[in-house]
Image 1 (cartoon, helix red, strand yellow):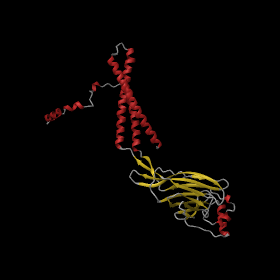
Image 2 (cartoon, rainbow, N blue to C red):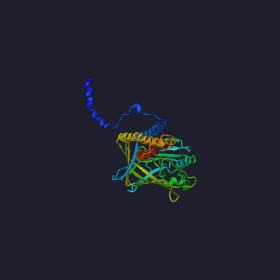
Image 3 (cartoon, rainbow, N blue to C red):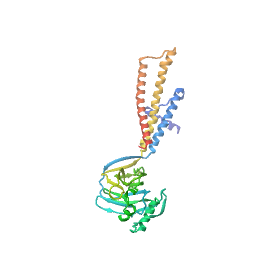
Image 4 (tube, rainbow, N blue to C red):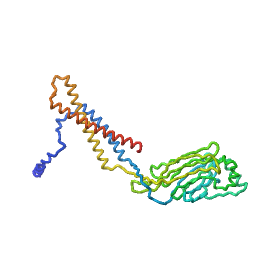
Length: 370
């Protein structure tokens, strides 16, 4: 069996000609302090770059694509949660209107109201129906008592509207004009201060930002109408698992209009953008990650090897050579070796610097969530 094995090995001797990893005998290897120092520094930076590349590989990235929205029709889901510290639920209503001419007053379907005290604590049950008070002194005095107690209202829910330009507003249409004229003889006393706890258009998805969440508007004196001008951007969110969420993002500007004719209100005026955004989650492939790891380890090894060899050569030639009585070889052949080593080191250093800066930029972008 051994003879057959030796014969087989001899037949494979020709493969030695292709060996790119020639072995050096242990007796020919010599460890040095400078080599150990360079090795420690190399290992530190190598592990730093490996950690950075691994964090990039594990991170879920997001990319954005824009295209013309070719979808027509459909419904727009408006999710809202707004608090009015200075207006009771008995006078507050949700109204909507769009460019098609559809106008709804005091909407109650999927709309809920809860009274709250001056500190924002909930009072009483949730209301989800129209409450029209009679035009009598008892009803009017009841509303005035709520105002004297500084009773506010938290109104929240979902409004489904046509996917066209329009607006929805929070006004005093819960009661008719006669009652409102008795409760607010001076319309400047209508306090439209409010807090937008939440406002979104469609389903939520990871990373979605709603600019009006937490927005607070306070009137110290006087009254007026608040107007929010909203640009809605249709959005499709693509999960890593392949599921798609149809939703919307939005941007907003606001304007305050001092009291003029009629009672003040809070308007949310929206327009639909013709451009749709696709938000796609993606992760770095394992093949790319493995390539980067090989580039880090191989590049660090080669560059630092060149650096160590060149520094050792220069140290021997220009420092030890001046102190030693042993002549140093300065033949043209040796000078050629020096020039070759210097050029190799210069090119390798440039490549290493480029790769290091690239890895650092990726790490910085990853930390910022870009």
